[in-house]
Length: 108
Image 1 (cartoon, helix red, strand yellow):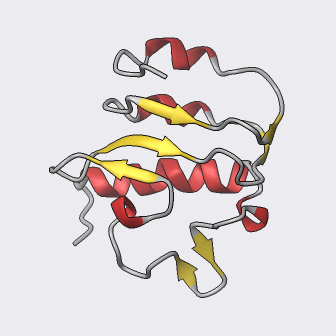
Image 2: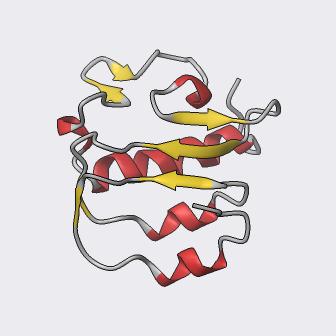
Image 3: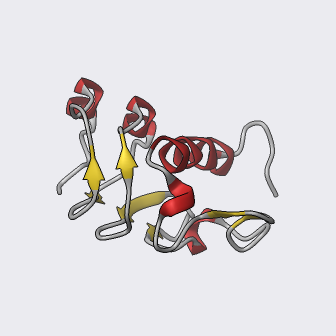
């Protein structure tokens, strides 16, 4: 269940920003469909390309070759336990936000 203090609410917000800023409607496997979020009330840990730890904290986002376009939101840097971010083979424009330099857990 989502509450105001739920880490899942923050994760969904950040990942929704990623979806909308990179043309999510055109992704090969979109997270948000015309009838709502992929999987309805299902945890974002069940969304395509999202991996979480046992506490349901996002640790990996694997969206290579998904048709992403646009720019990356700086808010991705607010996912403190993100260890892997694969956005290769997409059409993302612009610079990598400087805030990504503060992502201490990010390995790749």
